Structures are given as structure tokens and as C-alpha cells.
Length: 159
Image (spheres, rainbow, N blue to C red):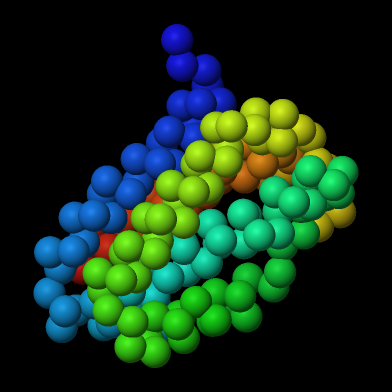
């Protein structure tokens, strides 16, 4: 039987199946903003890949070292991802990078349940101010699943 924790992580993995369908999107709309003042489809995928890479390179090592999670300023962090998408990387290469990073992260999450479930702080705060839930990497992945779906819905209005 799959646990709730594993289900959350597998949902995170399954998003790559949907992003694979984006290979069929016309190149002409790949870098077109989804709405005025919003990111493009390519920028969104780069943004998701950047956050997954950050979890691998910074968040997971911090938890293993007994530290809390520290997230950077969202706007400047996202801006770096948007710029990367606009630098000329092909749609297929960016989708490949996203999928590779997501699958690497999922593999780590599934192999380290203690790291995933450990209660830690996020930027010094112990519980989510909106839900009152103690922070853990699993909680962040749950939030990232909602975040993925938000972007999926934005993209579906464009394609």
C-alpha cells in the first residue's frame, strides 16, 4: 500500500508526464507571455526546474545537516529562471532538463523518508502561517504540487 507521503511524492513525479505533452506546443508560443505581465510557458518550466534544483542543492543538504530550510527572495530567484529560458535554450532541452531534475529530486525524496518527514523551520518559522501545519520537506512538496497545478492551469489557458 502506498503511504500518503509516497502519494504526495508520486504526484510530484507524475507532473513530468504532463510536461512531456508540452513538446507538441508551437515554438511561436513557447516564449509568449501567458498573459500581460506574466511569464511565458518556457519561463514557467525554467522556474519549476530552478526550484527543484534548489531543493536538491540547498534544502536537502541543509535538512541533513540539522538546519532549517532557507528560501531565497522569490522574485529575484524566479527572474534568474526566466532569463535562462530566454537565453536561447531549446524547448526540448529545457523540458529534458526539467524532467531530469524532477526525477532526480523524486528519487532522493523516495530514498530518504527521514529527511522528507523531519519537522524543520522555513526561514526561521516552524509552522505554515496559513495552515498551521509544521513545516517539513513533505509539506513543501505538497505545496509545490499545488504550485505545479496552478501553473498547469495557466498554461492550459494558452495552449
